Image (spheres, rainbow, N blue to C red):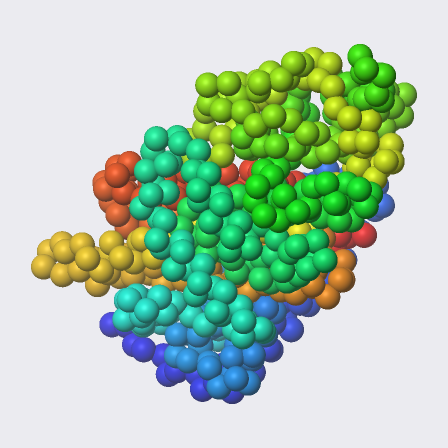
Length: 557
């Protein structure tokens, strides 16, 4: 017989979470100290010991996420908006994450990190699991009655999309969310058709989003943008991605291009490119990855050579190959990393270019001399299309070098990584939310054995955890955005947000397919698209292993 544990009062829950969080902080601090001792300052040891270093990264990410969940509940309480669902989400997040910290944390489907891999004598883990608050939350936090009640509240709130108050720190963000939620819902069915047909997102839709200000959200008003922060970017990106990741990703390359040009461009480059980018009339793409390099940007071989055009103008000529260039054919400008100094090792010889190109079509993707390419057919993440592109002396203006500075390309690009990872985390949250809502809707409507399948515990449990962990990922992502808006370094926080949110999106999509049963495998159901879209989130903008390495390095430095 299952007994229902006595509910926490708000003050008791807050105190229990704070105490358990202190114990979790001590556990991570102990793991970090022990791992530093094991590595002994050897710069190569962190790579050899990835099972341990990445386990530390994941453990610290969990604990940072719990900090943000407690902060979220306190903001809601202060505003007198902490409801039953939010309280249950808080205790569920603590209950489950504390249990995983103690017993085994999934870095991927087949890789479980357990603290004894670092804490070999078991002292740190023993102290953690013996903590009274940890012990109680592990037992009660996400117990079966809690899961069941969360599922009931989700079903009751389905029509109003009442899946937990995000506690935005700016009231205008709630209005922005509502606006883009309506827009996303209006385009969700069409988006599924575009996905199935592998069509480009229509130009008219891009124009709509441009008119709504999507492409200039974070660009200063002086350059035609809205001058808003990364928090607003996250809200808009999440809602668009909830409709379809393709819609939420249209602004990704604009965000990268805008940051590069604002941060490192000349005044003439800003004047030439920013107005069109903000309006959505100029479509950018990012062309960094090469066939044999992947994440190893220091090994890029595409080169840019100075020259003179037939009419005597200074030019650069590009030679080499790029791959995984999203929106490569339809774009008007490429932010492209190329080697300008063959003798400079690694990153030092790389420069960033703003490469103008004619807009192509499906029939003629690259209508320019010296430029060729072919589409890479993909499972999901459609709507813009992926390309492999060859440069055979492709000629670009002499003033295309970003900021007019050679050898600064990688440094210029690095400054965009924080925003790119925060934006990708927000896309992942939107995909996870989409999976939750599709799974919940199906579970409420599907009748089996005389009742909606949401009434069955294994279905309800899946939905409850999807809602909880999506909120966890959302709060961690918004925290990283607030750090960026405050102009504080946030490579660690952005890496954590991207690392966790991508895994949450994949788990939510996989579970939502399971809720759909055989229908989830049918292309006519939108969840089939969400599944293949979710899978890419652990790969691009820094694979999960790269993100864990970045987080671990920051923790150990």
